[in-house]
Length: 377
Image 1 (cartoon, rainbow, N blue to C red):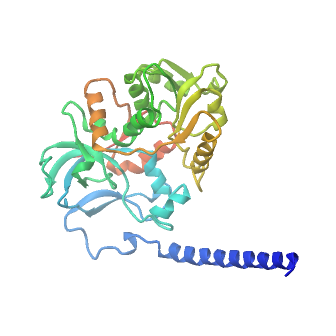
Image 2: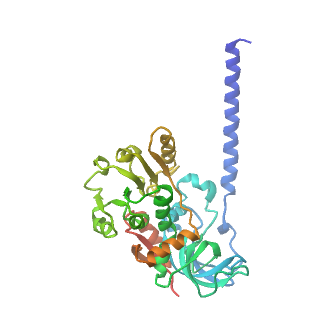
Image 3: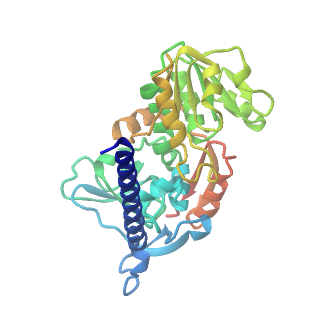
């Protein structure tokens, strides 16, 4: 068999194989798409027997898809506690799930429709009932933590996912902690390995994560530089930042300063910009991934992959982190707040019925600190 003939056969195999694979992807993708459904497609036969109010959504979209509706009040399983929610907080995570963007996350969240029709994660409230195997908590205890569907009057959550709220801390303060403060703590302490005396640059120092990060980094003994807009300069400085940079007036990447650690809460600059002001053996940690109209297909994934590959060829460490909300770190953060070393920054408060407005405001990127949802008694 001649070489030319062999190459021709190989080419046909590749073409046919590729065609079969493409057809398979289209067929199975189509099946998965149309089988993607949720509870909205099978409405209950009657009204809830023990109703509570909660935010629900049946389709991906803007905040207009959100509804405040009566749903069945949850019952605590053996390892759970039933919590009467007093406050919740809004995170970018919420609009990511609401919009179903970046699209690759729909592989887990539901291709055509959201598989889970409830929204919200952070909450704080009072334990109303405990499961049979729960011994660490009792009715009346004030707790905070994370649970899908936190934009509701009640949540049932595993006891190991909540921490006790200090008496001096308000429910609103406690609800602001889980996602944002844990992300800030783990970004500088665990992923960034921040040491006392090191120089830290925070890109996006005035948002939910950034306001916590400035204060936490100062408790670790770092020299903190915060990047924010003009209207937030004094606020970031008041949190303890040693230096503040107004990004509307100055490009931080053109400064002569070099930083041991850079944490990017925004994702709006290139890696080369950050490397330009990163110490020769410094660390870069990506936390934020842009706004609702940025990177709809893969979001920050492309930048993350580039950072990981780049780390193989440069002495600097480039990477990202995802927070792991756990009871131990919730307790550490509660202690910092109780001691006065960290103070949650709360921008606006909305009632449960105005969650759509709260998320719309967060999507503007102008929130200073946390946006809180209050739930009446």
